[in-house]
Amino acid sequence: LRELIENLMDSSRLQAGTLKMSFQPLRLDTFLKDMMQRAKSQDEDVHVELDIESPGIQIPADPTRLAQVLDNLLSNAMKYAPGSPVYVTLGKEDQVAHITVKDNGPGIPPEHIKHLFERFYRVPSSNITIRGTGLGLFIVRRIVEAHGGEIKVESVVGRGTAFHIYLPLERNTVEDTISLRESTS
Ligand code: ATP
Ligand code: MG
Image 1 (cartoon, helix red, strand yellow):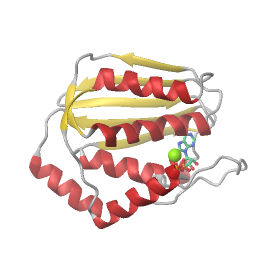
Image 2 (tube, helix red, strand yellow):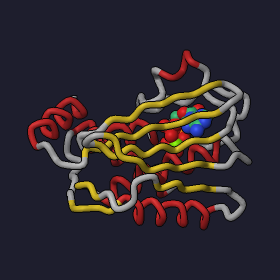
Image 3 (cartoon, protein in one colour):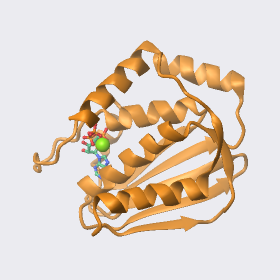
């Protein structure tokens, strides 16, 4: 219930443009290790694997908000791809950090992909017992955009789903302002 209320509050703050971000240098490898530990502590049977291709990357980020992003992607993988291992990678491409969160779960049918990041959108499924509000990915996307980054999804039905997050290694204030303005419109 607390999570639901927090999601609703964040979502309203995003709509109102009052979600505050507080940026500081963040080492992504140790950050991701902590996030994996946290996922494991929620369900010790889950198999999570972290592959750090580029160690020592540091980016300007809001650690609490970025933790929220990883929490939702990891918990989605655990909820919607039960029994599947969850693979997380960290790499570097040009001037961006690239994080992937991938599972070998049921995947998402292509007609739903374009709606995934909408407020309250959930893929209609026969398994109605999985709880959620459909706010998670909406919040995730807005937080990534507020970091000047981008999120993409790749999914194949019967094979699995991969979320790709691209985060700039340096902060570009002009772009940040634009992406924040777009996010709140
Ligand atoms: P909330 O995160 O607010 O508790 P939620 O998990 O339903 O609720 P989102 O995180 O926004 O909401 O996810 C939206 C929908 O995308 C989910 O309901 C699910 O149908 C689908 N989905 C998300 N991640 C995966 C995944 N890894 N595999 C299959 N489907 C997924
Ligand atoms: Mg979710």
